Image 1 (cartoon, rainbow, N blue to C red):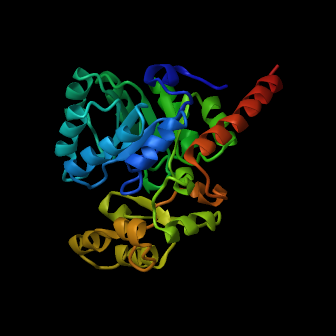
Image 2 (cartoon, rainbow, N blue to C red):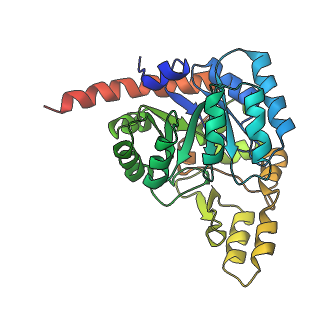
Image 3 (spheres, rainbow, N blue to C red):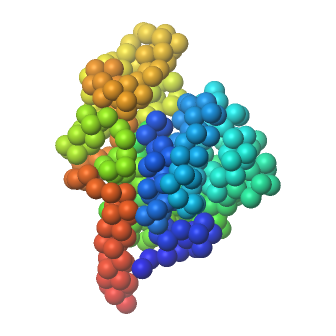
Length: 314
């Protein structure tokens, strides 16, 4: 069985994180992933602190396995959620869409493992200096907020820039992706889109069906004009948003156009006004299955690939 330093650090069976997908990764999904031996992560997204506190308690009512909370730093509630994770004594905090420097000292002081998502070498070096526990190197193949570099290029550069454990994310859906991540120097992986097909994932059936029927060219990136590019499925909404992005529409109106779009997709399956976040690996997600089975299947597939690779090199 594949184990790594991240398993020992966090007390998990498999070096697999579940991505913090806003309005998707709730307490039920996080608990299921943690029960399956990975690290389940509750997404704070743009939600207020009370929502995050409730989902943490939902997860803990199911089991006592380690769980994390992902804080989206662009959220107007980021300061509030930063305090909630301390009060609720979560095991791990991951962060995205920004720089968590102002929170790290307080989190570490209460024993929380801090694992920021980084999309550049500069941010990786800064997080290392500030005492982060590990790093998630997330390439632009991922769903949601994305950076410029691909996982293949980003992960080895982050591994070279830090002595911290590195988790690879973006474009990973099966054992081949896990093996590739380890070959690039990572000690674990984070998967988001793959867990959209988990039985415990409570997204609208329309959303889940779109993932299961996705093709290789099913995603697109919007939001570059506002400085916050996002990868999502190609839908009437995303196509219209892209047109608006390259029109004369004022920035304030463009930003308002996307407000609430993810919730419409997750909760209502609204194909016309909803934003269905997904990574480029969506086409590799073929069936709905329990979260624990996803983790076990991916890791069992990765092990013989790694063993074969070690025999190829003389």
